[in-house]
Length: 299
Image (cartoon, rainbow, N blue to C red; front, side, top):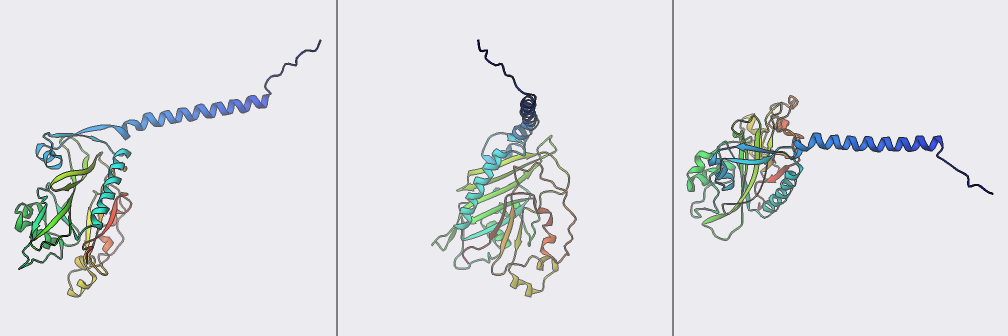
């Protein structure tokens, strides 16, 4: 009678199978550890106390606090990506772009700005636009600060001016507000970028950043004047930012919700005081949301 031969695993097969099983369980354990360590950091909600006035100004909400995702949060990064595309569309359709600097919340978001066609003011600089804005909306005179090149405030507003055939007014296509706030009772920073159209909030993103070490997230933007203005022989601090070859432009930086901290230990700038990078060398590599924007797309 023939017997069926009994066969088992060889020693080599047992070693290979055991090695594969060990590698598989190790990978699962590492993945679980990574998820448990980072889950809170990447998806935790933080209550930030800003006060009723600010929350109402930012979001038209009757509350003194907000529930905000702590950075880094990649869901908020998706919102920032969407807002960046909308910003590009606004700039491409603009007649002019003006970046203004401030410390306090922006209370001036008009749908249009009266313009005296018979005696037009000079609005070929951000300060010229600030003067026009304050002449029609007095609050702008106290909210926005004067500057040349590098802003003097920590927050910023970007006014996107649209096209029109009406010589007595200029339409405001959109207003972007970039704000950095220290919530009551918390050491970190609440950062937000908001878009308003017809004085109504249309899009935004925000995040709470735990305190880091290093320099603050500044400047939010830098304004470069035309190169031809160097002939005026102004101070080196002004001339170093007179770099526009054909027209003035801005470099703008928005906070990145995908970054862990706003602050950063930047290397000491090695640029001379006559170099334009002297004013913004510390902004390199801080955010994925950087822009180069012409001040007057129509020219």
